[in-house]
Amino acid sequence: MTVRVVLAEDDVLVRQGIASALANAEDLTLVASAGDFDAALLAIASSDPHVVVTDIKMPPTMTDEGIRLAAEIERRSPGTGVVVLSQYDDPDYVLSLLGAGTKGRAYLLKERVSDVEELCRAIRTVAQGGSVLDPQVVDRLVQARTRPTSSLQRLTARETEVLAAMARGLGNGAIADELSVGVRAVEKHINAIFLKLGLSEETAVHKRVVAVVTFLSEVG
Image 1 (cartoon, rainbow, N blue to C red):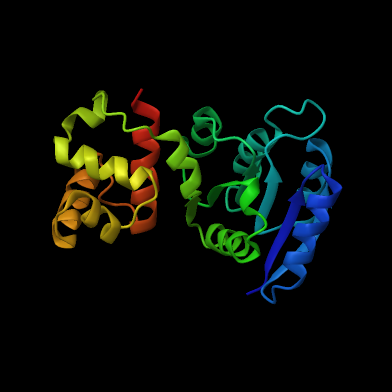
Image 2 (cartoon, helix red, strand yellow):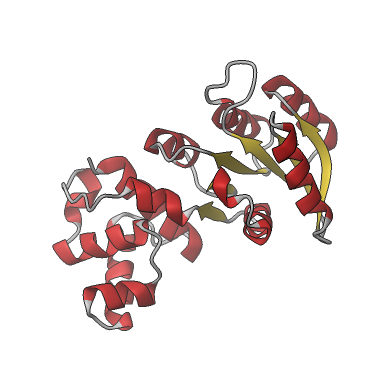
């Protein structure tokens, strides 16, 4: 299946660069582009995309247009994926995008757009209903914060350590190395985390992302 993409980006050079990247991907096609919030809504309505790639700040207000666009897409066309590109690792932006639901949502730092394959992978992932959270974002957001609150207080000290490592973008093997335990032990801790956070019915990718979002939203 060819993934139909709408691009919302006010910077002409960035827009051209992304358009060029999509042109070189056989399974992705750019069906429309826009430089502001209102034009993006019109482009989405007229082209019925599978995924919208949007800057987080665009005219007219240059504040949070990308987040508001994602919310509007969820209201009008809930099956459409959204990839938000941002220069900011502010947790409020991340949680505004992912806090209400992670399926078909991605948050990438703009500095990573130069990695064409990473951007294309994110588009493909959200097109299939998956989630992507830039590991650099969580690495900057999480500063070994361990204050237990609400659902997190059900976790043991070791489970909290594992979840913090997950929030920094570490895979199971890297977590095992960092904590000097076996991979099987890490897997058991992660399964316990999912169970305690009520994520046992989610898919594997979604469980990891939702667990991280919970951690970022509840620790201080």
